[in-house]
Image 1 (tube, chains in turn green, purple, yellow, brown):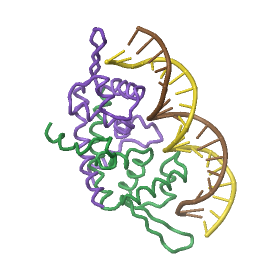
Image 2: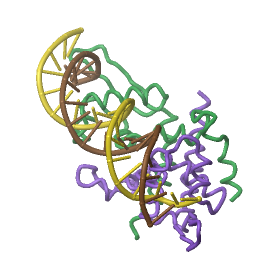
Image 3: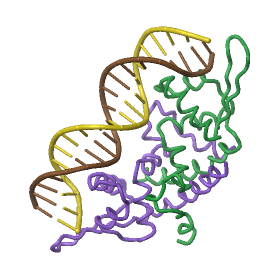
Image 4: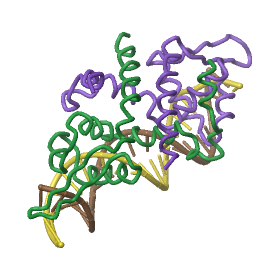
Length: 116
Length: 116
DNA sequence: CTGGATCCAACGTGATACTG
DNA sequence: CAGTATCACGTTGGATCCAG
């Protein structure tokens, strides 16, 4: 249990923001975020409309909010091309690509859940 | 990117329940759940009141709801002792202990976020 | 002590329409 | 095409009170 002990960096009642696990959960814990990240991991670069169509059920508002959050956190990069019609491309940053390890662990655990 | 490809088991619009990653996120993505699991991982066995006091801010209702969810999913086991006053102890199941890998990955990523 | 019941406020999300 | 503005609703969590 030693590796686990090291994960404790802070009691939550001081400041949630300082706990790295909480920070990470804030990134991937929100609805739709996982699907956006999955899409970008699989496809590489995607445009706003691509993402909108790929994830049936998400509204343009929610998508734009999530993308902005991810951009602000340095997980997704946004590139605007000065064309007509406008073109904007989203792709994962190097930091964003590091999320793969988390998803693999989540999958491992999720499969255990299904065995029940 | 091959290991990642394997994580894709399903498009979300069929049924979220069948994607192991979504299932796993449902377990640990809810507010307070991480703190409950952390407490149990660190302390082993805890009583209702212990958890209530350890996590400043959580309401008894939310705690009982979370604990029941975790119990239903087979992550936490609940033991009732026929005493007066009543005593109920919570502890992680073997499945619950497998969450450690996820938390370690989350911490790894969370630390990268802080470097910004 | 454990935790269920109830009421309520806040937030996230969806639908839709509209602009640059 | 790529979003933003507005509105409304459902779900979640918090506060309290109370019961076994």
